[in-house]
Length: 174
Image (cartoon, one colour):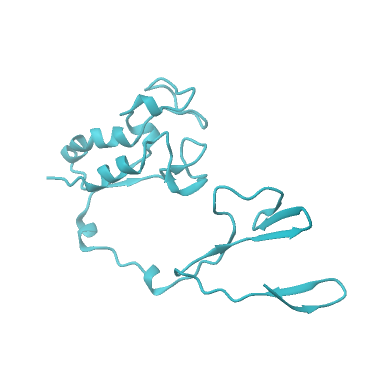
């Protein structure tokens, strides 16, 4: 960055950025002597932010963002699934304190449903006439509903992994 001006209170800095992709996020790492802090959208921190994200976001509508739904969606029968409550296909990835299946749902409770449980029941969904599945968030998050996502680039380990997600996505109905 280059200092471009100063007044009685502030120094003003500037840099030119050409993003590799159409969007970007950024933060500031400031160092003086042995001190180092990071300034991001949610504040100033003494430790490097992790996971990536939560920086200053520069979203915008670009022509690639204007979506035209594919023709097949016009006749599709969608079924929305909250993975934690649908089916538990892999008990080894259940969160600590998983509730018994069929119990009363609570705001904080987990039932252990996962992506493998969805894959295991795709034939059942096909029998119902379902031709498309819509999942609530499956990304890493502390809650059962995953709308409080921590990392949009990582499947929540309580649901499985990217390989299992891809397996479900490649499946085609008959």
